[in-house]
Length: 122
Image 1 (cartoon, rainbow, N blue to C red):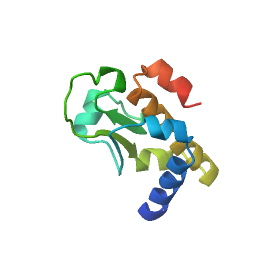
Image 2: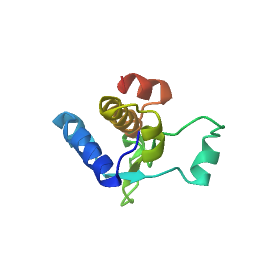
Image 3: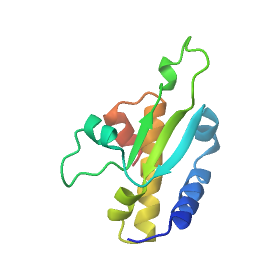
């Protein structure tokens, strides 16, 4: 699927705005970002092989580990535009992929492991 950066950003914003208020209100100190691709360091960290894509990434201190940290930079949830577009055949699939990726990464922010994050994104 092909989509301009502006249209992709608009859909991400709409999907973020559609999240329940109780989820958004508990998502503290998080910056949502869009990048075209993961960096080589991010790919290496996750040992992504050929044909595997990283749709999103949570980087930071999940909420359950934030005790006594003091002032810290915002956590980051990054969506990787081209991986998501590659796996989406139409706008409906694109929206579902973006929504699921956001929910998955927010679950990591709340302290979920990979299995828990997968459950949250369904």
